[in-house]
Image 1 (cartoon, rainbow, N blue to C red):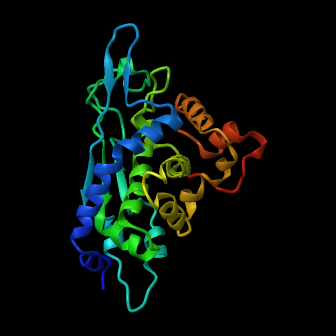
Image 2: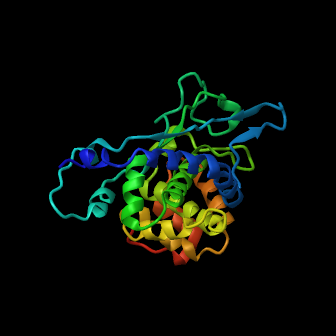
Image 3: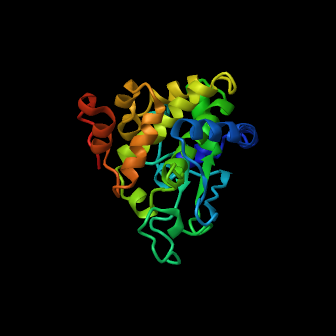
Length: 269
């Protein structure tokens, strides 16, 4: 049986459950991310009064990376490690341009006065059939796991396009060419902080994050050395410094953040 055939058997009402979770919890997750990272999705230039920012709609899709759907499985199997071995977000995805829009004449600069509202088209996709399958296998609710996935993908959006207190963001090309260990580590760290803030408001969210983390590997564990940092705001400060330097390096970020306490061995791309 192909994985795509298995996913096609997930009940359609799972889609409604994922959509309801997004509708119910998206704004509180966004608020939690803003609080920890101190980043904004809109910024007003104090001199010109010009307001800039980017939209990122969230879509619930019946989708998955093609290489996952094309795999074959037989008999009794443990599907989770196989899916998680794929170097992609199989539960959801943050889509963004790989470079700045050509309509921006100064696209290499990160200051918002050189970007144009609406030029950068981004979107988040949650794959409801995969979420339904994983929720069942992990023993967590669809609502809780959907919230975890949404937090992870929104964290990508905020770390990429969120404006810092100087009104700066990462360019698309620098974000694209940054280490996957850094980008996934940032998203995982922010997700972990979200689960701590919101577990009382979104029942089971922290447990869903922890159960999923047990099945993950590679870049999805690269945030663990950063958990010794007591203040999440330090992550935001270090991110602001990193984004001004071009494509981000996991090892350099960890050295700036943790100093002598940075843990080597989680090699970057």
